[in-house]
Figure 1 (tube, helix red, strand yellow):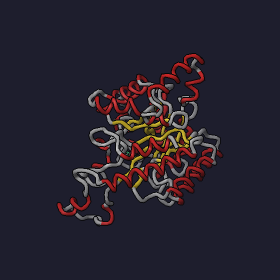
Figure 2 (tube, rainbow, N blue to C red; figure 1 turned 45 degrees about the vertical axis):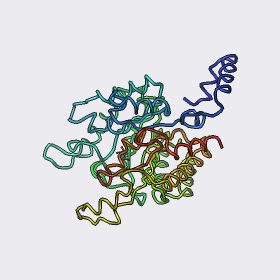
Figure 3 (cartoon, rainbow, N blue to C red; figure 1 turned 90 degrees about the horizontal axis):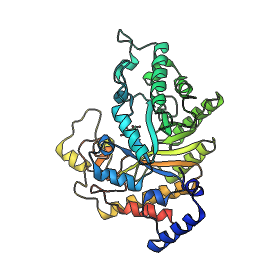
Figure 4 (spheres, protein in one colour; figure 1 turned 180 degrees about the vertical axis):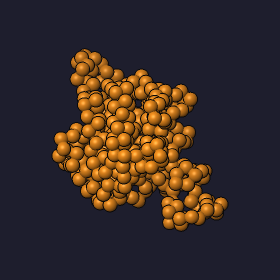
Length: 376
Ligand code: GLA
């Protein structure tokens, strides 16, 4: 996948002619994937419309700038395995076909998670919490069926998503309650050996926070001590303009690299809107005034905030470059502001600006900043 491997396969005259052509036409890379070739692949998470052919403009943008794709929702348990014994692979197949057609690094997101998983998975026939044995059987069947179907075609699997609480302990989710504290280990155990070529990773958010970073290190070490193959960690990277600090982000990349595993930045975006948590108590309805206060840029992003976003992205990418030997991939959660989940979360109907391309799919100052860092 990495560019240096690609070029080793080309003949010398071809490389010379190619280099001259490139030199004559332009001296600067113009796409994200070219700018970071040889360092890491650059990915985008796609909604169904983009890979199903219903949004050709976004699809063209993806093909131009990205060489890895993740599906935002179409490989999650609720979509792919909605009822016991019933698998629905139509959209997932389209997604994988799209990645193959465009020669991309295809990411499977996600095998086991507590969210976007149907409730039947966690219940017995009486509606009580299912037993450990039943849950392990369901987990094994799901992992084996899905991984086997895409063997050799999906290159990285998020085996488990979000098993940790903010303090770094195991989150008490439905998997934990039914199976116990070896549930993550079991998921990795079931994923072993199905596809020897695939990277198996653990994915979570807030991994730049020291307590959660330490918890993730302990979790990965415990899998390694049991002799399980765990190839990498996914740092989701749903960031803000002022959080996390670059120091904490870098310290986590170093801590995970020291475990001998790959680091994947899996869901990068930067929320530029005010947080509602400071305004909304547990049960306060969103008034019109409050919505306006929380949605300060309905028409366009002021130049000073564009600049702040650009500086923020440049800071991230300087760190990614610095540690590129350990970073396999940097994936954005969406290809443009137009389709970002942050327009509707945690408040519906806001206008957010978290990515490198705007609503018209045009590059923003943050894009220029990221391209500039590649040339530094
Ligand atoms: C989490 C999940 C993703 C997605 C995003 C928000 O980070 O891992 O699958 O749901 O939230 O869209």
